[in-house]
Image (cartoon, rainbow, N blue to C red; front, side, top):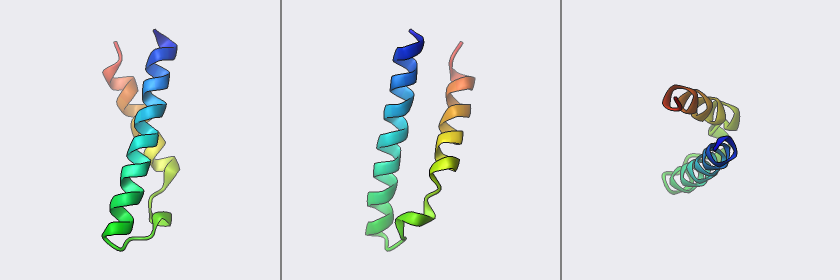
Length: 52
């Protein structure tokens, strides 16, 4: 169960980063503006609060 949630978390992180880069480049914002560490920290806290 733990590994499944960890995999899902990584998948969410990855897709969110891709969406962010695509939307960012579409709106003219450089990808460097998206901080990967901030993003993973956000997903980490989200997972901690959502998981029982």
